[in-house]
Image (cartoon, rainbow, N blue to C red; front, side, top):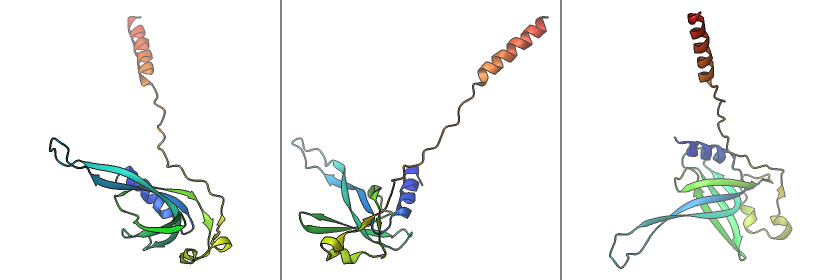
Length: 155
């Protein structure tokens, strides 16, 4: 596994229902043929979907999914994302809410106060970076030892 996949997997373990997240999904597209008749070029772009996690299914297995919901112009839009898909570049947790259910499907019909969730104090975790050990310059020590040895041999 690469470093990016391990970071993604660590983030995946922390996603819970009630989280507001941003999912960065890679969308593949093709370009039409140009005037010169060149072959099709494949383009990739990243699409961001920000919403509330309603459910998480199948735990930690490779087929695990999350259901994310957001409201666009008064219309609710839900997307189901496979967590271990190579098409998902990264997942950011924006905020965390206090919930007492594992599936928040009741929020589909809820309006007003019923649709509110209490937010918890949450600080997004930064990916851990490996600290480099300070390099000790041994060349100066070796030079000093050579000078001392040469001086002793000359005496």
